[in-house]
Image (cartoon, rainbow, N blue to C red; front, top):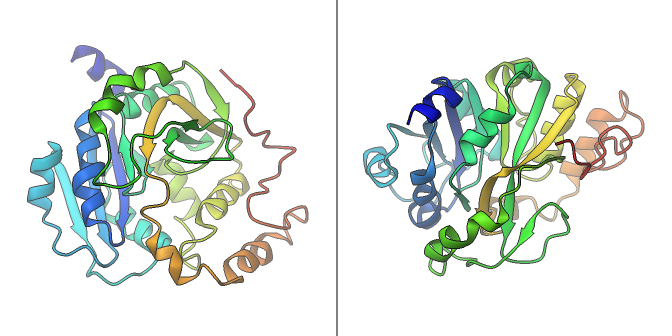
Length: 277
């Protein structure tokens, strides 16, 4: 216990969690993973529609979390707008932007906090390393199937085997779930609500780059199990539209002429997968 207090310094992490048609994922996956938290954590769920009645007291009881808030009226306002609404009432020193189909492994929080030591709070955008049940083109992600639905998720086996994936290693990468300081969030002014679901990651990374952030790091000891796209039902709203991609390019091309499509992130300046520790 003393190690945890010294490591975390009583700093709070606010988990910002938009939830769209995710009631089963929340109950059977995400909130179970919160048992593994060691730091001071609060959870702010935005009800983006289709979740039934989310009871914060029941949620707090399930996950042994001291602070759980549920906001939103069930209307789907989009991923980024929901994140901004969560941030408005967040009280933490750090924000963790997460999806409901992610199970947080032991050490997910303390390893991120440890990685921030001796860094200027607004100088980095960190992320956790994910274990994926299916194909992934990202070299730093782990491929191992512990279930791809809330009803076949094998939590017991995952907890038995996860330590084999732990590495004291940090590489250049940036993807959900994101971890950043409140000061950086305030500096970039939150996320752009014009992006409903697609290109939300890309635009946040570009915002941070534009705000002089140059540390885009994946902390390997911060692990999450990702049921791979189960929380992305709301993407069906704009999956066939070109406008998110066109918006991204039009937003950034004047200042950064090299940006022709999302996912580019100045590859010469942000050398993804390069080991930094």
